[in-house]
Length: 286
Length: 324
Image (tube, rainbow over all chains, first blue to last red):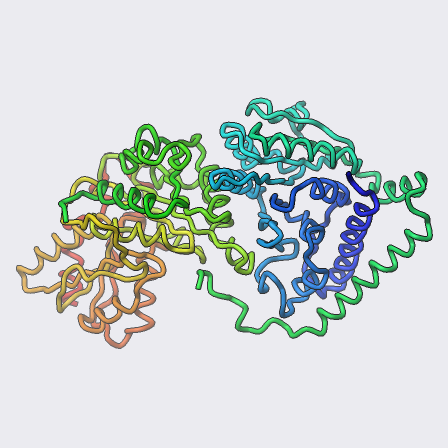
């Protein structure tokens, strides 16, 4: 059962972190911050439908997935600021955090190559006798790439336990008049579109993960986002309207999260800069 | 110890590694039922089953991308690209993904996969079955690049590549596949990556070459030996990271170096090798470093023997270098 307050807390933390990082980027203290494009609710609701042993293959805009799974705010700031303790050792650009312990794959750029990695990972897990599922995110632009079609083809043929979630921002692109959810049909993959509502997303991801776990193969979910609406604000308002949170509690939550973010930022600022020795680290395993 | 050709030696390496380590899986176009376009994977499907010997769609980017996912999980995939000429659709997956996965994840993940591909000309393959693209991959930090020249090295290097924790591009000179037989141990063994082999010792000129061109270098060395020119031949075996120490030691002795490779001349690996030698042994050089390479053209069909740096093109370069 999805707790809407937990969803709100995760999504709001990610939003506030992005806002703080974006301020630092505008002040040229850190590099470019890939925006989640207001899709935090999709990421949280989908990620919370997974078992702890399942994997997430995020795009570079989905870095908040690592946050939901327990990576500290401090780690994000250390990466952004190039401080000791950066989990990527100064190597990844912003948005590029991965974590094996949290089962978060390394996001790909510029193409959504990670969708194909998700297939290999799911395949490997099955070969090792594990009932693990891979949740792979991309966008409406990603579905135009060859990697997307490679991923659908391989996962469709071998009935791999991968759940693809496409965040459709509704950006006008020239494309054939086929809904994204139907792009899997030629590969034998069922699809479904879903409104940008946490409960609905959580439900469809949970059920598609379960069928994938039972050997019924991949599934394609299209979540329709509207660029004109901020879904997080709308979600906050709906929780207030439903009496699930008061305006005062929401304010307090926001204040506490901002305090956590400021404290993490301060702690990262005080950390030592990455040493020169860590820059240009050996490109091979030691 | 049995006489084996390179196809048999590679097949044996794969068979034995799959027996030793159940994380080793094979994937590629026609690697299962057909046993690979050159039969390097013949019999593996029967021995290890469809779960570990996987026939894939004709999609090189997909093959390598899936192999990356498997490697990241902890398997040891060996992907086959039918010809090195077909590797370019997988270029993004190799260069931007496999090569960078360990680096960009700060060591959270490694990407231990091998990508095998037949390479080089000399079989009347024309434009798209003859290329030697090693320089693209040598230029990419994070990749190791291997090219054996004989069955013994092929087996030991492939086993070492499979056991390595980094992605390895493993080029197999198709002209040598069945042309050479030699004693190859029946048991598994490793030849360490990054160690060159001195094919032949000599005093006057060092030739650095690999793959099928090793045999052309030997023929050229034989021919000039009749004129009193003694040639040392070094086969790096691992093209990157290259064993520059062995090459430099040889040049310090001979004072002359000729690099021979099939790939086009401009920005070929030969240029890098000569620069590395120049930086380290400049004052030992008694003649300008020389390249004998493929021409700067696409690989031709009819005139392939004019394009390849065969012995008849190496000999004049050796004589000119010796007389400089």
